Image 1 (spheres, each protein chain N blue to C red):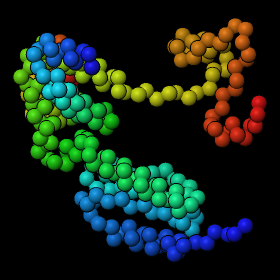
Image 2 (tube, rainbow over the protein chains, first blue to last red):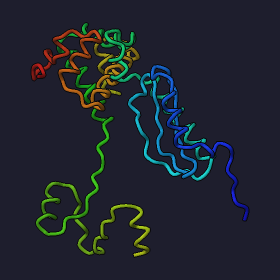
Image 3 (cartoon, rainbow over the protein chains, first blue to last red):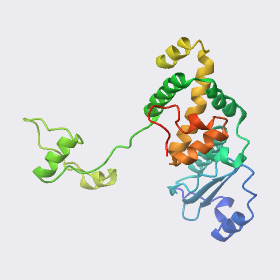
Image 4 (cartoon, rainbow over the protein chains, first blue to last red):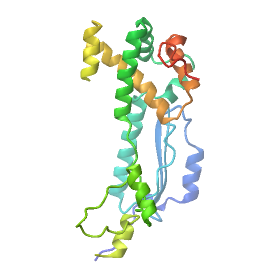
Length: 185
Length: 67
């Protein structure tokens, strides 16, 4: 089996990357910088800067197996930066300092023409849209140990009651890794 | 969406115009939710976006102004 040879880009050192970070252009220019320590084959820091994308700070550490995956990471970050610059957010509104987006201004200022009843109906519609779009994160907690806790969970509606003639509940596992370690049970 | 269309038809407003207005307001409010902004800051943003102070404060709502 032939050992994979490293390309010329693999000779990048951490000092060189840090010096490149210090020479980076100002944040007003949208750009994407991905620092990859290819010696350790680990993407330690991915940073996206620019107008409207300054909130994306540090991506989690991504293990990189090949240069192809690095290319995919680059493409994904570029797409993400482009998407975030297109979507107006409160941060972009605040950077404009009193001169917000024109279409936003026209639409929101148009609400002044509504009377009280119409405005209240409009707000109820907006509230319905807003509550539909909110995703509540799923809570991951093990089933309660004692009957008192189980009763409390049942009354709170957090867990469902097991079937009367069913199999005993499976033990709760914290992660996929622990499932792999445990083997087949 | 049906509720919005019924609202627009009842008020004789163009549905597409209403969709744009709702989309804009949702953009502002989603950003406020994402950044966990205080009501005071949201009011500032709404006034900055051209809304009069009374509706922005919730003055037209039955439960009164927001603090």
